[in-house]
Image (cartoon, one colour):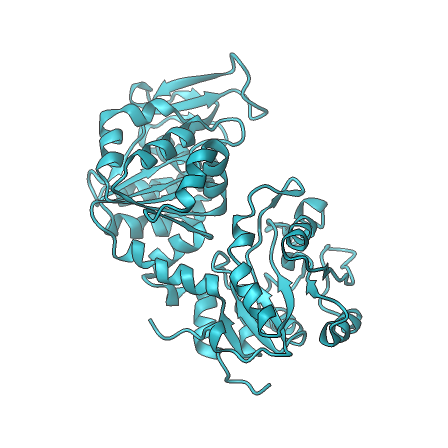
Length: 434
């Protein structure tokens, strides 16, 4: 991998440093698991200790409707809970500026001159720092062409130096890629640390097991193929597994759409090239409703006994019984490396599958355990808080801040295949005079 410019080599004294972080942890208007905030403190402290002045930016959720392009500015996508948490931890007051909204399609039109006064105050030390609103509220963030280029220039115009510490944000959006075209750019400490620890996956101790779950089949299918080439065993869960079961066994599961079925069909064909690598958890939980765990409205099925054309309601979990089956149990206990990017069930109502999975993985004392993804870490912490606290200081564990990024990096073959990393390598360091 080509050399990546590092923040420790940056001259930031007296300069404004625009930092892209991945603080996407606000759910239901609160920070439920601050892990992805806390792991950026090393970079933030370093900038402040060297006399740099902070402007932070992060996305929260997915406020943009892919079909209509409209941007929702509902409070669920607000960065306020993140700012409140930071202020309590850093004893630093962050100002959140406001900008002109697009009355028709929602979101902010761009960075306008109203922020200039705050920038002057920041340079003079009259305010501690600035935290931009949810970066995905800006029209140019997920745009292409001229609109994205313009927004990249606007963001760069706020600062003297750009630091990317958002390893979990791998998509080539304006705030992760285009800003680097206009400023001296460096990788933060978290970004560096995450890239270095990818070797745990690229060069694992065998046999290696991957456990992949969740709802985003569209972002995982290429990575699943790459994983099957590399690893010894694969266990899947969540909607990914539901779609796979629908196709393989000819059953109908409520909530699995045609697009997911098509991807599952392609994935099924891929698995045939790697016989015996995919391990199927045999027991699943069916629920008649998604409104909660309602007594009498959920039941466990053995998928091996379901007849073709069987119609099921929502499959909401891989049942804990699955992990007591000998072939599943032995696969987990015999693994020497385990990569987990998986929530097995529909949270917060159905967590038994995830709880038993994480517990069993913990019982394998010899394996290197690599957890990735905010949802995975949050579920681990919620279901097994005691084991989670112990695992944080256990050298056999490593917690990545970004799960999807790891899958993308596996698919690309190395971290330099990620567009934000490419941008740092291509345009980084002290290429620009400041």
